[in-house]
Image (cartoon, rainbow, N blue to C red; front, side, top):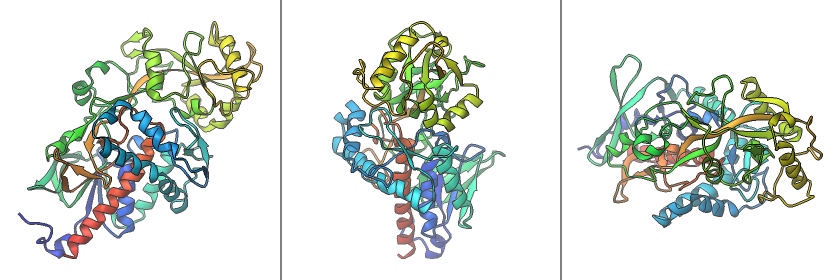
Length: 473
């Protein structure tokens, strides 16, 4: 077989880096490659680029930053705590990944703000976080869309960037222990090949209900999801020797909107965690039942221990409630949700029996009149001090939804894909939700976009080094 040192330099000089997936991880990798004058061929299986990243609405974690200037060593410990029992295995390896994620967070936000001009000036505290550290912009565009569309614009301006949509990778090509390219097909079904080093940023398998999700988490059959139905891509990588881990660790997000116009739809729109982070509360049968800023796992479990209201799909009916102060803090989100018919302006009286008392107790805790009985200490922008039956609130109905898969192919801190023996697969990197080991048993809100930027940029840098090193050999 031809090794990197024996491939003719003129062949390598024409060789593009191949990026699979156009979510934030893929775009971050492509951006780093283009910045180093490396041609990029990006393949996206959907008709439009952006992946799930473009839907992200809570923000991206980072500390310290110009908007969150306090040195935040708790970010690492918060992530370790959230990862839970998963840290009982491969401890050192996982700690390296988490350290890379949190220690690189400041530079990730700085790259987006200072080099790409993206507004991330608002900082909120989400569930499981000791301090506010989740950044989003002040405008109407959600942070995921703002970041993704900006990176896409920069990339499309480069003659080195080639994007193909509606194209599905069907096989990873290899020669011995080295990845050499991919086989793919587009809408006409004709199979083609691309040759070069490969970065996989193809996302998770939370929408693969009949395939990988059924295999690894059959207990989640029948649950609604925030993900479009499509197959997971990890098998393409295990076919060339990649190791997978944490495949049974699937995050069920506590708040996906139930659309009053189509309550039985299995595809739900996410109710961003920032709604709770900025002061929103949750009511079940007119009562609060959990600290809304607890981890996603704990909030979900508190809901799911109760009987479901429907089994097709399996869902609960929880009210999410905001006052005027919270609404103003997340106005762009709520206006969008109301436009889609997922939230409405209503009164406390219309929330049902018990709601007034629950909101009064919450308002007293927010005003410092009493300690919150559920342990909440941050109420952010809640401003309603004397709730009455006719007090105006903003409300929607939410349910737990399958949202994110923590498991995937194992990478190291260089984003290199690893075999069972821990040996790297030459010519192959991965970043984002297709990978495993970064989040453990529970991902903190705001860390998915961060993971994409951190490990996507690392993958792009090392792929560029790989190509340039081969060209100079």
